[in-house]
Image: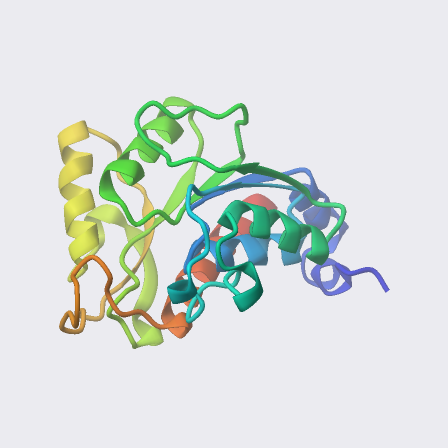
Length: 224
């Protein structure tokens, strides 16, 4: 039976054809982005673009789909490409092993972008690129230091609350005079930081849901 049989039953032939004809770019292939990319692949998106500059580290294993003992030290985009092809050999995968910044441009214009970067300047640079090329996008806010999956939701950036990353992004977006846009965020107040503030605790049940919620938003936009 076709690997997309259950997808056909939900979206119909027209919906599946729309997904096959679509290109989605996931920027950041870590705790959030790996789940988003996997969901897109399993749902039948025809062309997936993955962007990340980092290699897999042992500390990634607790929450990232691409992180296994066997993949430590390997570029995340290489594992993403191999895993997506293993899920669906018909999926076209374009991988960019780069850090996104204000000078970045890529030779693809996707139908949608999922931002799963955890660095504010890089996030804002991606927003500017998407706005310049009139590409719709959804952005992940902070998923670390959260435990209540029931408080993960989608809202406009201007409507977010209690998320320190969202607050920083709001200020940066306001300074750049960028338009409001949808984000995945949690309304749960973050837990106290234990350890280094740049290496905060996180749990796969929350970070994974962030990625799946973002992918679900994109899939619905492509199909409906």
